[in-house]
Image 1 (cartoon, one colour):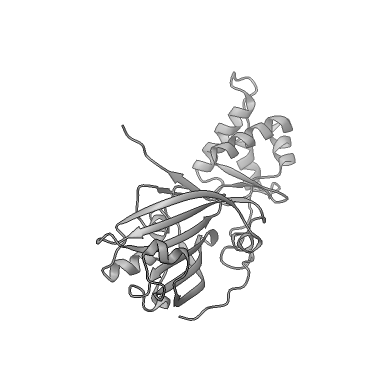
Image 2 (cartoon, one colour; image 1 turned 30 degrees about the horizontal axis):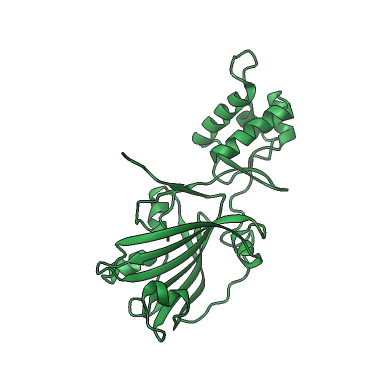
Length: 281
């Protein structure tokens, strides 16, 4: 899996739905404004009209603090706009300015026709070679893998060039959905020379852990980032709309001897990923 911030026989895979891994996940508790718990959570967000700070910035501060304190969890729906305006005694313009600011900060995300959600975020430093699964576990999340393809086949096209293979070389082709706590985070296609992965079905949730165990770790990698529009098939898997922009990450991993041994193409769900780079002088 690419280093990221906030990736045998063919197996059939049905289109993901809310009931499958990668579905909508936990219930949207925030929308139940009638419950005492929801009403109490909303009341704590109320801005102080006598304060010098603008009301919308107070709302940003209060809601950010509530999210940080776990009062609204990742993926949870915030109460409807009408409910928030009524209970907080603010105008829709004020509320929308606050939500716009939080969208810009990456704290919440809007989904047309569904509402505003607390944004789950996976951070992975761009300088790290830690696997996707390990990063999730370190951050208290449960990684998941839904396999689309695990098979051996002949290398072709860009794979031959990037991995320095002969035209008749065999590769392990590994295509899967990567998830965190049941939510689909990325669509990933990885290709590795067959000599390193003779039985693709033996790979669990981490390709890197498998390669480490075989004594062939990826010790260095180059990544290329590009914004692309989703086609209909990828949009279904990522539970997004066709034509939406996502980040495509092409990664080439190298072994200790300098040979390329991994080519991974990942399409990252734009609601969940944060790419972090630390710069020093």
